[in-house]
Image (tube, rainbow, N blue to C red; front, side, top):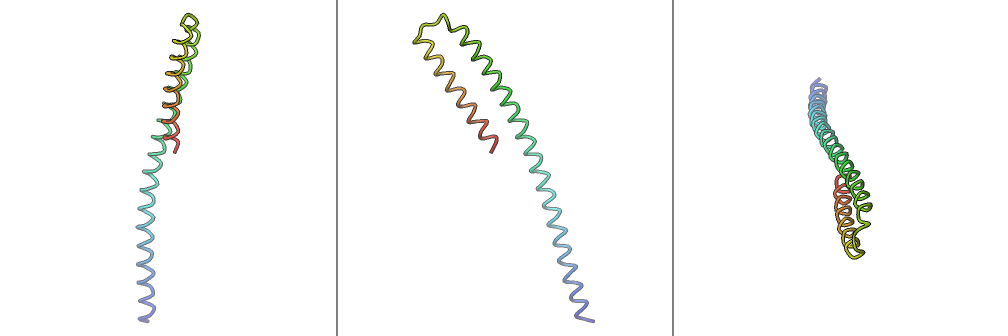
Length: 95
């Protein structure tokens, strides 16, 4: 009888531990889902910004027809630097 009581207490203790672990994992899951949603929103914003910048680049390319070749190359290099920085930020957000 005592062995049965000890076994039941052991099972009850293990069950309580599992319930606590389940609650902790549920909280962690909720936090991770919230963080994932925040990151998705941020990535969407960055993608939107990237699309706007691509449009601006297209407009600048059309308007640079009057620039000297050296000025045009300098402007293109600067735009490429901006784009690479934005793409790095997006890549970091996707991680």
